[in-house]
Image (cartoon, rainbow, N blue to C red; front, side, top):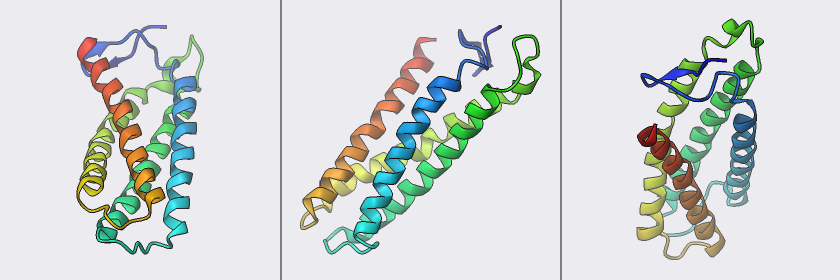
Length: 155
């Protein structure tokens, strides 16, 4: 199976190689979305601290961004699982889905920055578990971004 051409380069992976990595990331993102939803519903959207408004915006935005990422990953996994080795036509939309997923790194980066700003400036007086949850979300948000940019630079 020939490598996929994305970002003007022929990659060492084909369009059918994204099923298992996509499923793994999908599992992590769904768990993350559920944890964020639990945190949001635990406080019922009202946070009684100095940065409660920013925290509300951050969590709602995080849920939306994660939802979009989850949808894009579902599409990537579904399309990657289609076709056969001799019939790759069913996967011809895979580069467009990879571009879409790459574009979703931009709001992910913006939301990671917003979470870092909230933790550093406005988290005084907030529930320590909530602050810990946001710190965890911010830190885990940086790892996929680092892997993405390292992959772009090294190939």
